[in-house]
Image 1 (cartoon, rainbow, N blue to C red):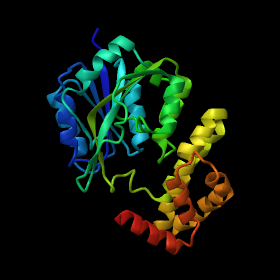
Image 2: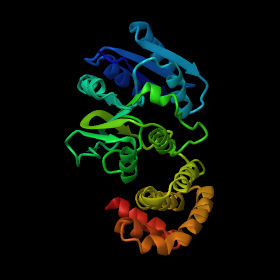
Image 3: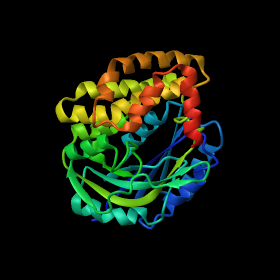
Image 4: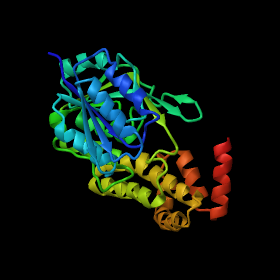
Length: 323
């Protein structure tokens, strides 16, 4: 039986990248698709481009809404999706033409709650990176194991792209529209907590993830990035035992240190004020982090630097970045 795949594309001011993204979806060799474009209040020609593709291809559905953010756009797409599975594609990314055809048999055979793939990551300077290439065989796991792998952050990341979610399973989970940074981690965490069933991992790097420093997410101020701290605290406080220990060691400490570094190196005075609050959290955890043998030396080194005077932190980061 062929599965209908609903492809949800949140769109906001990406007229330069959108045609390549949409051509890569429409041109898939697997044709049983429902393509949902959610124009999230674009002020450029993105909305017009969406409508033009809907006129050319009956599989394309366009929703125009006010600018509520990417989470609201994805949630709106989930509401109307009628496919067996939902796949999220960011509007500045693109996929290879045989991507869906190569995963469809696993969706049919295993009927997973989620199928996760590897991806190729591009940076604006032109360098390409395959971030998750340490496992080549197919893995089938339960939802709890998938959550453990999410925390380890070795096999796959937090992004909802390059994944196929069973639509019925998504009816119990939504993106938190009040979180503007870290929402992807919160979403996948909730998904694996409330759903049971098998999760399939395929090392299939057919999704091309474009990292743009000036994108809405990556150009966020520290005030928005504080949402990430809230997500970290929320998950840590919700867990216990092995899962709590793993999350603390692999994600929580690195997230706090990274956020502190970002705030200290910012030119924004408000960001540097916020950095002081994060520093206080890190001071309380300093001995616990430094004495933990399961926390990487790199994280510990960055923590020590963050405890230095602000001018030293900024100089150290410039040197680190140049190297």
